[in-house]
Image (cartoon, rainbow, N blue to C red):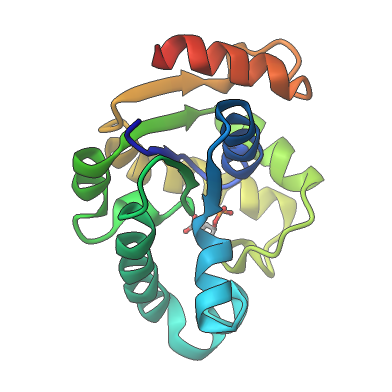
Length: 174
Ligand code: S3P
């Protein structure tokens, strides 16, 4: 099996879906942010604080190359991963790419429920976050839409039923 690489905006559920899909397929799961933090012995926020976004993107690019070399795994990327360097083309060459597509409203709702620290969203009011998501999604979507599979999470009636999502995703991946 080619590795499955899950992409999409922050709050799309890449890690949750990726983990469940890997379990279902009986393969290893790697979350790129987790991999970066483990390899660098620093949190993503610490890397942003120390090296800025530009520094983080270089590390992310290098770590993507390490993770993408693993065979037969499921990888979930950071929301920005496909949008820098040649990362998206590289992922399309090495794996089966899946874009978890969601409306800005769904992403915002998920991000409000989530507890993870996202440096790009820190120190913003909920209104500012809403505008930021809409604008950034417009810039990023051309990259996301290069994925080989597009999986619309808004059509899942009950997103909490993760098994439902994974079942539909498996069917789509064939
Ligand atoms: C980022 C998304 C984050 C993380 C970093 C930057 C982005 O990952 O890589 O904070 O630019 O969208 P998640 O999409 O898993 O939150």
